[in-house]
Image (tube, rainbow, N blue to C red; front, side, top):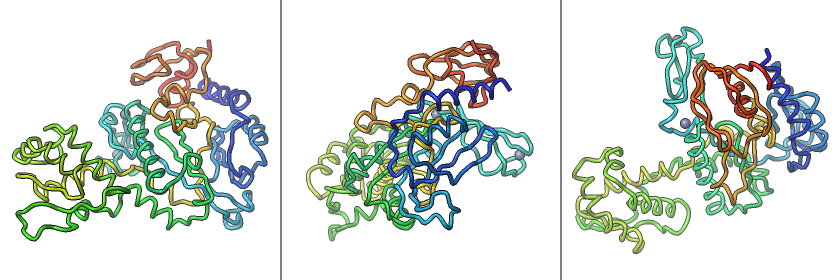
Length: 412
Ligand SMILES: [Zn+2]
Ligand SMILES: [Zn+2]
């Protein structure tokens, strides 16, 4: 009980003092807002004329989570059918849950609600023991997972700029406050796109329907043995991405990488031995020459791997849903107590979620930690803890309490 009072007090303080009235949300008065209360009720179809009005509401309501529509409506407070859709931002959601890392086996657990069976790593669709479909996942916003999510965000930014031609002013990047990044494209060009058009954008950035072999069979020399292939124009879009991706891959390639791709030892040796020749061929002209022991099949396999590396891992449903409610910038994420924070695109490499999304910088709380992996807030590293009473800075304590890993003993 004291734990939930603590969270509510902190959230209330944030919406009264921390939340910036200067926040800019384009067309704020045409959007629908939704709030989850501390009693876990969803209150939606709300609308505000200004950020100040919204802030006053949040100060009184004290929401657990705050959402707004990517869509603009004529009547934002009406029922769905009567809202009259005017357009929507183009939203991309990059979540660590959609990216395979090696550490989810270390920090993620799941438990079957029916039989109590549990396991480590990514939550399966069904319980392998009883077949139950209700599984509780216990994930953790870990540094490795979050860096891979940021890496995906950077890839997406490149595609949006280089292939679609969006300017820096059209695109905003946010850390979600938990396990991922949101990319918002807010401009007239995207506003009227329907779901089908948005699905095409999804397919493009995820490389769906793109086949690596198609890039190689452009024109084959009449004699199969004289192995040179004309590559497509590699100056733009996916052809460029694949060519450059293959070059980067070959530059850094080691035996182990090739073994993981399933190549046999002879092929591995041939690739490593002829690496320079292959690289020369890639950069010399539009013609890729194969070399002894590295034939078409091998090149295709390498390109398929590069395609997988270059495609952006997004939650496709979010982008195609033109009515989607998304977490509002600068509000607290109830899963962590961190803020959904804007990431300056020019400094995205330096963005540190465990420093820049921290909402509370003062105070200490004594908690009893049930179980927590090692984690960091700012420069300070905490844990791992197992059934331990410990005094922690507010942000660290809040993270553990929000994750259900700790209970408040006393507020210092
Ligand atoms: Zn079960
Ligand atoms: Zn991780």
